[in-house]
Image: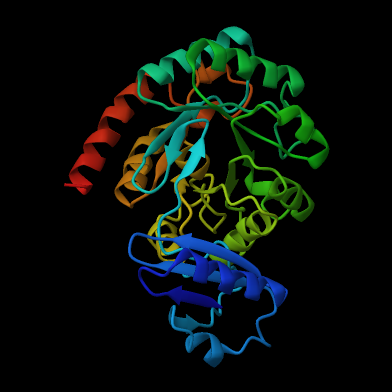
Length: 334
């Protein structure tokens, strides 16, 4: 249920209403927009007298929300959310470029790539320290050592870092990571989502390999229901019958999600295609579709990368792409 308050409602009267609702056992999310304030009620609202609330002098209207996701719903939060990642704004018109290697391999590698992508316009450095791999024999990441190398790259460049956490037991190692990533394979790891929901740290949530948009948003809801509303969504392709690309990039999800949720939405064309030459056109399409940013894999030596070299751009290719992305965004926003 959502309650839309009238303009210029006195703070004291709003507080009285919120206190009364909370005494009914409900959680109240307050969304203050430019033109209206919305109270989103989470919990069992079946016993709430909708007509009684609608009759209050400060209430403009009351509506039932049928969507199973409440906190993530645009109905609860009409304005776009802007997520703060160590001082960098994401969403609400703030476009962000995230770039870096699939996995951290050495200090020279990660620092060199970090400097290159920053020079090309990247605002956040990505890099995997813990790597979920399909084969148990593939490189699994440097783990804690990889996290330390990411911190060194951050110190050298000033770029915030994003890296994937795979298990709640590893969370203490990620205390000073700027943006936690929940990967596609863990999108429905509900115990992990609950633990991350207890933190007050931004989370990048990737869509699962075969997840519907409702399932995707329900995973975001798990995090937000725990009190952590700093969630960024990432479309990274879904598994379909096609076998020419690694996945199928669902660009229609961007405008659809824009209608359904207030959360920022990124596109990862690297994992979506799995082929480096396809990354630039899909990145440009993602920017044109209205995404709030792009997450792209960049490696200084893709031929010898320990992970996902086939889909990685070189720093030079990334710099060229960044210029084209800026041109596309300028044209779309003109």
